[in-house]
Length: 95
Image (cartoon, rainbow, N blue to C red; front, top):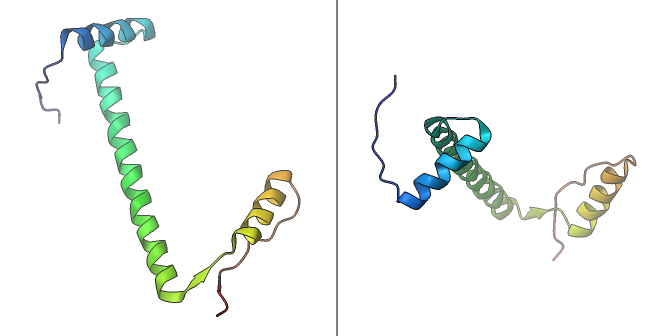
């Protein structure tokens, strides 16, 4: 079900949107909906990333285990170069 929302656009922005819509063969309405959808999806992905980062940090704080950068870099370089690469495992720092 659709609902109606009124937004006030400065004249200059409204003209830019209309011009962009015309260039892409879309209506102004569809271009605005697409832009709002893209922004909402971006913010949702950012929130998901923040949640994942918080969980990973909590796991590091609880276990003290991390992957040394040298190990991860070697893995990434091998992987990108197409060489067989075993993902490194997290371990506690000595000391």
